[in-house]
Length: 116
Figure (tube, rainbow, N blue to C red):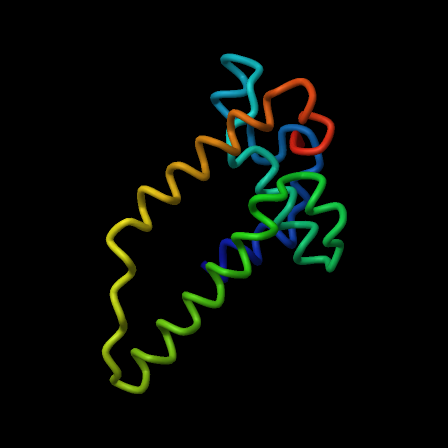
């Protein structure tokens, strides 16, 4: 995960075509919930939270939570502790949030705030 994040931080995804395009956006013109995620990661890696928020606000909220969870898992594993299982409903909640964000960011009234 760290190597992937480092690759994004070192290679600017704001340059057109540098990482390819989102297949959903290319086929339909709709922004998926992850559109702008690479650019947001790049901006976060350079300390520009406002620019990252403009690319993908959901990722700006989710990325630190994922990193903290991953670090907690690593530390617990290194100490030989049992890692607590995630709640059974979490995948469904995550899916619901992704679908809702994907719909909301494509609404014309909210696109200026949520679209990349």
